[in-house]
Length: 516
Image (cartoon, rainbow, N blue to C red; front, side, top):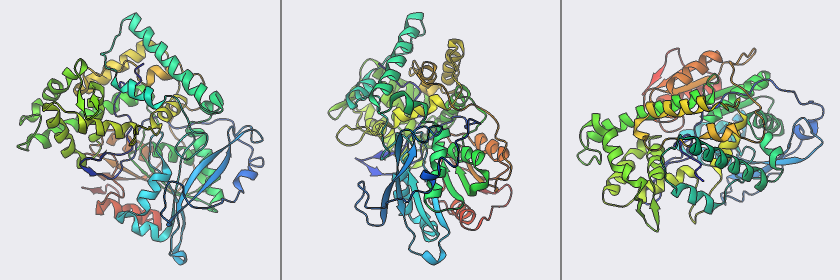
């Protein structure tokens, strides 16, 4: 049962253990923002908003600079006296209590990225030192993710490995489409059967409910207003929070913006074009090197790449004790496009493939899928589908789905052969619970002016999405000229200085500010 044919719709980090360790990159997506829904009774939620967090040692880290807690929230906010679940929270307390502003709560993206892990990394990073002086840096694992309970479970580790090893080109015949939908139903059924609370959790796992959890967390942290930092999908959470609680926002910094007015099909088509654009930039960089695995003609890199990877469809190559499939080669390549720091390793991996080995590309794909040492998966891909499927109005018309698939490949010819035979469009068309959000234009009154950072050649969240979000939220736009996904707190002095000034002092950059 093959579950992924739209590679690189999310990534948590680019980590090639055999070569070097890169800074984790926030996970991207392009789902729409939540919209109006029945509002929970604030009085009935007081037992949650007034809870005191029991901070203690973190199971995931022996570093005494961090402490962790579990936030109790309703499974269904419209039934606050019903079942409860817990949200994992990690905190790095500032030592400079005299200058403390409050908590800086962050989300790294996804859906499915661990905010706890991201907070632990960012709090100790050199670019974030000024923020760690003024804020408690706090990360939370959204519903179904990481240290939150229950954890969403759809596929076993063995099933995920088998899915990745399966290669086949798209079958658009009636029989092929029927099989795709049957596989999609089987996958959705496993998500409901293997996860505690089953369909009820699936129905309440979307951004609408993550935002409600975030407001409970804000209150439990003792912050009158929220200071929030969101990357990629985290910008969707920030936008939705601003819509639901505009009077409770102190500052909102959103990097790698999701366009709230694009439906799932349009967002995927736009995203694939972004990946092709960044692949072309990689091609130019590569062609300037004598050791370029794709040759010295920048205009021919797509063909050279296809000639190199297409044979994997029928003949996977060894990758240590495993094998590199065509799909993993596509996925590993796409994952490396998120950061120029990874381009060297992508070139090394493609050169390695020429020699008949797929070890580096498998490592890149492993990181994309959250496959840890020992073969365990974090489950990020399952959360991704579960959230996406309730965050957008369902598309069930096969003509629309197939048309979107074709447009994705037309916009990204370097992916040819990896035609999406079961993307989230297919999965979400048969998802067992209804959507809880829909595409719309945010219309918010009383929101303090946010700061949106957008990168000119971002493969996953195109530059125009940041322009559009800044316009919709009446915020300030900071442009970074580069080819990567997100940039704040990654060492660019211009960007980091502007973002830190905004978060600490509310100082916005001058209009039309550009960094490079």
